[in-house]
Each structure stands twice: as C-alpha cells, then as structure tokens.
Figure 1: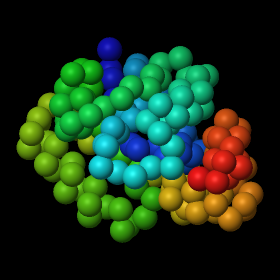
Figure 2: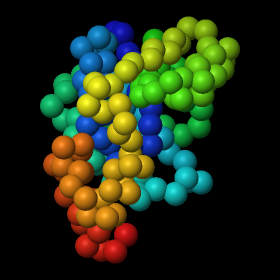
Figure 3: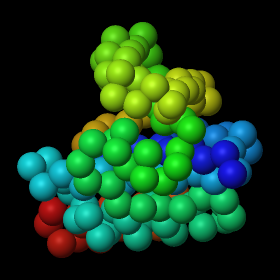
Figure 4: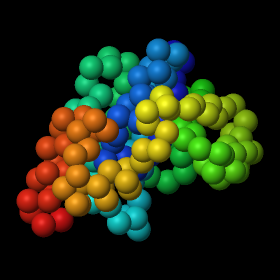
Length: 161
C-alpha cells in the first residue's frame, strides 16, 4: 500500500490544506494527515480541537486518516510505512526552508521522498495565521475554511479567545 504523510499544525485546517490532501489522496492508497504535537508552540485551538476539526473536515476521503505526530516527522513517516512526505509550497519564499527540511529528512531516511505540491491558485496566499488574524477581526473567512472550522472560529471569538 502506497502511503504518504502530510504534516502540519493545522491551527486551523484550511481549504488550502484540504486541496493538497485531496490531490494527494488521488495519488496514494493511504494518506496520513500528521497533526504536529508541539507543546512549545502556542496555538489558538487545542490539540484535541485541531484533531477533531481536521478529522471532520476530511471525513469524505476514505483513504485519509488524521493522526497525532510528536517527535521527528521522518520517524512518524517511517512508523506509518510512508513512501513520501507531502509539503505544500505557496510561494518561492517557502522553497528554501522546505528544501532544507527535505534534504535533512532524506539524509535521515533515504527511503522516504519529499513531494512538493502547489495549492490551487485561489489558496496561494492562504495560511492558518492569516485565517486566525482575519477571524479575530470578525472578517468573513467562509470561503477559506470548512464549515466546522468557521463555527469553531466563531465560538472562539464569542468566548474571547
């Protein structure tokens, strides 16, 4: 079974993430969406909330599963039997960092390749940070996130987060 792993913090998951996941799901038999667990990183949503939002957003994809990943990504990929790590590149500015990570991952495990994917052009400027910022100012982000994420963002605003 050909498995790919798509890592991220997903705080929150966006339609740009889902675009890449959906295309990856057509190329691989199994896609692991690896929710990065990093207690040092401050997030708007808790680990459990991020997990639930990602799982709900991806439930229509039968060959996609959301899992938590702590430690080195390449170790998570190896444990899942992944052949590839999928990374999204929105702009040229993403490339240098992503290339360094890909080379280091290949050094640590030469059997796992990194695949770079461009999101659909309507998502090239989109990231979770922008979504959190816009939402904090009550801007309409409905075209950029799944409905469950939109509801969760609204609930955070109501709760004062």
